[in-house]
Amino acid sequence: MHVTTEAFIRDSTAAVQNKTLQSRLRVLTTFTIKRNAAFASLENGEALRDQARSIKEKTIARLDAYLTQLEENVVRLGGNVHWARTGEEARAIVLDLARKNNVKRIVKGKSMATEEIELNEALEQAGIESVETDLGEYIVQLAHEKPSHILAPAVHKSKEDVAELFAQKLDAPNLKQAEEMTAVARKRLREKFCAADMGITGANFGIAETGTIVLLENEGNIRLSTTLPRIHVALMGIEKVVPTLGDLAVFLKILARSASGQKMSSYVSFISGARRAGETDGAEEFHLIILDNGRTRLLADEEMRESLYCLRCGACLNVCPVYQKVGGHAYGTVYSGPIGSILTPAFAGLEKSKDLPFASTLCGACREICPVRIDIPRILLKLRSEWAEGDRAHRAGAPLTERLAIKLWAFAMRRRFLYSFAFRTAAFLQGPMLEDGKLKRLPFAFGGWTQNRDFPALARKSFRSMWRDEESR
Image (cartoon, rainbow, N blue to C red):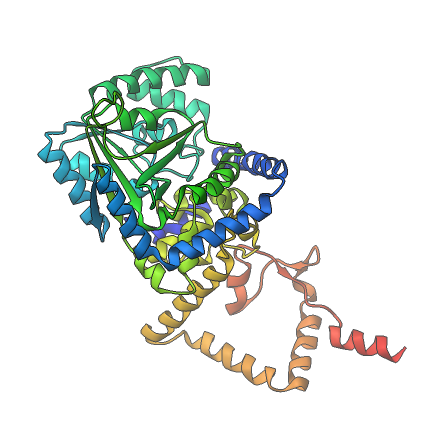
């Protein structure tokens, strides 16, 4: 995974100042409104969330057994299973399959896992045409960009942006309405479907007891990608396995509601191996690639493990006050928002993504809306602690001013009189710096606090003093 989070501060600052992006990000509130309405209409919605989390806990605890069972049943149904420890191994498997079968054209269904391993770039370098067929993914591919949202990859683009893009890339000028643009994309993609040798998708779920791969979508493009080409390759993270079809029923009730506010996705496909004798639909060959790529590191860490429960619904992005202001591209990785801030350090390393755990207000909205109740704020705090401890261990030493400030703070905190005197003095001296009741700019080494935020004014009277006065009445 290519990560550029060293530019997070620069890119997020630019994003906040981008008026067009800000207007586009306001649509996220619509997703949340629809999500809340969808759950309100579900009598046992909260119980289903608890049940879904319980299933995930049980599955992740015995992940090896369920993955082995899934493999056995996929093979029993005539499919092929490949194991990939890294993104590089997964790319190599796809390229090997393509070369052995003389594949020249590939159509792809929407898949965050293929974005994670940068599969499109590898196929392009190998001279193989690979076309995204989800409309949002198709748009960002034409623009040579990455998705900016798990659910809505092109949420950062306006209708006018798409019209200009289609005029440049598809020679389709003067498009005004969204329906016109959709019709142009549908016609171009239909040609790609009919000429493709291989279809590549992700997998929302893999059912261990049946060997079935389950795919959810709203456009029908995934169904075409899995049935028209002669070879279907599905890339699935190890965490996507669920034990039974009965367990799947629970997730189907909450996933679409969390993602788009729908009761159910428009298309739900169950892929059970390749096309068999007497069947008219389906690929001649089916290959399932089961991907690790850092997931076992999460599995081994009891505090981080619950991040593997993620269903990739995108609900946490829609309520995150940071994502709502900076969008997805500022994160410098395919997984953005709160969930990306905990997944990317596991997949790419904390050293490469050190800014992401700090890209949060810790307000807890992500935890409240998550369909499986992942405690994202707690995990973010853990990653912050890991970075702080690791940074302290490897750097030569903190700046002198920082070390002196910490020592002075510790000295004052151990002496109540000195602590009270320091704050009374500071409260008195702050007067000339106050503006509208707040400190807009702190002096000297404290100025970093107020570069991007106001500092609340210090109370003239401490709470302890007010409490003492109240008691004496």
